[in-house]
Length: 203
Image 1 (cartoon, rainbow, N blue to C red):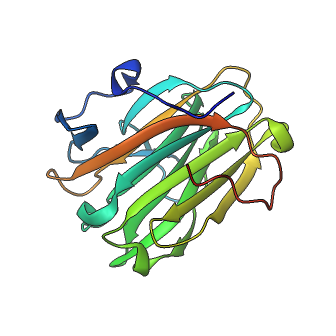
Image 2: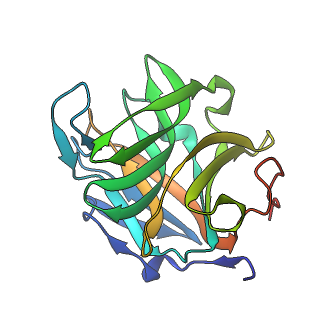
């Protein structure tokens, strides 16, 4: 397949946000306070009320979401991509503010959630792209990468993902505040990664 931009109107919200608006070709999304995605581990609670704009994700393709990170200033503010195969089988990946520092990470959920992250303070205020690829070299797994406008691609996670049918798209969550607004600049589908350690194309 060729790389193709996904129209915002092609997606369906897992939960409608407070509001959305178009800003040129960008989509600006305001999240509800308390919105999040998590299942059980450590905290004991289940949250299934994050805001994900989901569309078809073919079995041999990558999905890319690009957004402005400058609004991620509150504890646990999140923006990125959701890969969804069911209510207890999903992956969220992107940026999250934790302990006052911006982190790049992923939550992989198969019944229960785990959380991996690494600090990227130099990405604050920059435009960031998160890419998740399945099929191709990955087989029955996903490869998640991300980059800022000033960095190369970084591998975030390689994880099992055996779903036949799945959906994916932009994600925003605001567990601790009610005024988080994230500007998404692109949502695209692209060919699956050919090699685990080969950077995907930049456009």
